[in-house]
Amino acid sequence: MSEATLTAEAAAPARLSEEWLAVVIGLGVFALGLLSVAGIDALGWVATTSVWTDPTTALAPVSKAHAGLGGGASLVLAYLALMIVLSAGAAALGEDVKRFALAFTLVFVIAYASWFVGAWARLAAVTPAEQAKFGLSWSLKLTSEGGFIVALIAGLAVANFFPRFAERLKSAIRPELNIKIAIVILGAFIAVTAAGKLNLASSLLLRGVAAIVEAYLIYWPVVYLIARKGFGFSREWSAPLASGISICGVAAAIATGGAIRARPQVPVLVSSLVVIFAVVEVLILPALANAFMSHEPLVAAAWMGLAVKTDGAAVAAGGITQSLIQASAAADGINYQPGWMLSVTATVKVFIDVFIGVWAFILATIWTNHINPRADKAKAIEIWRRFPKFILGFVATFAIALVLALATPAGTSGKLAAAIGEANVLRVIFFTLTFFAIGVMSNFRKLWEDGLGKLAAVYVVSLFGFVIWVGFVISWLFFAGVKPPLVS
Amino acid sequence: MPTPDLSDELKAAPEPLLPIEKKLIGSSLGLGLALLVLLVFANHLIPFN
Image (tube, rainbow over all chains, first blue to last red; front, side, top):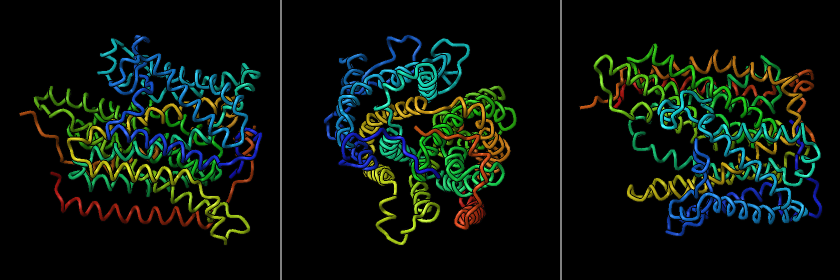
């Protein structure tokens, strides 16, 4: 595995490592988000982008309490806040702050514009209900994560067609830092999402454990083995690929890449494949489920959770499956209560997501101690020095948010979810900044020409030759014969 | 700035599977299959509510 880092050259001695800076900023965002539970809405002014057909309605502050600000002002505030915090971070890393701030301004404008374009309903709308809401007969079904692809393409365009401009952006192109901050914030979001489904989980617990076992202990080792032995990929490529295909797509690939200290382009390229293949899955699997499993609705729903990668695509596939099967059943005079199939898909997916942090921790430990040991590996301090510290931030936000979510009375649980949701908007911005940065700094044209086909081949072989069918068998084993309640 | 040259990386001699990788693959798969059998058995004992 390469130890190559992609940071700009330091202009002064660093007072803080990038790892710890990511933990500090990520925990800071998490803490500010939590303040809203105590009635202090510290992040509600941050701009978020909704799926749109009318661009004037796309931007708004994440909290309705700040709706008076309007989308434009909240976007300017978000930019200023990030510019100040990241400029302080650049100073701590020993960078030229003025140069960073100027470059970051340009990077932020392009990256946020990418998110905005990616949220256009023609690109992002997934379910028939969403398409109907926006009056569309078709859409690319990229989900809101399609903005990441737009950001990547924008970065590639800058790198390939405007190299002098790319050079000007260089000091603010920091994919590793952005990824790590986003992952720290992601821990809280996953925890709250998981806790929100724990009620249903009382019935689904056993089946949820089966999903975890399948994703981490069956899919992952087989996909890793296929990538390593079948296709000759290095460990650096194989581990993020195995996580992307096996676990929950983008977040898992990126967390794994960070845990094993892969170059940032590696998990980002894998993530791009994940998003593209998730679209293919969303188009194919719900129709297959309806054609062959409409008499076993929860098997079909669980199958979507186990087979479709990325959370957004999986839930979208569950929603489409629910619509199709409910319509088929209604034609036969059977009226299932709505929501059950979608809940099963979401719960199965959430159970899988919960263990990303644990898995990243395990992989980080193995890679640090055994895969890339140094001559002085016997020293415990060296293991600690090389350990990716941001994983600790991820585990911390996950654990704190999960404990708070489980300890929060049912009546106030919405406040916590809203608080973490506000922090999560910044996580999406950091992810988008990462994808744009990777596009700017990578020679992806050469990758597409020379090697991406083989990477996609691993994905096709694993997904369509193994993951989908094992997911189906396990869904059948655990959900066959279980039906949603009927409308009374 | 370094970029991954996937083509060259694929042409390079493949990295052999280290014992720790074999152990990770084998133990994960073994534990996964064993747990799955146990869960299938438990699934038959505990009905879905």
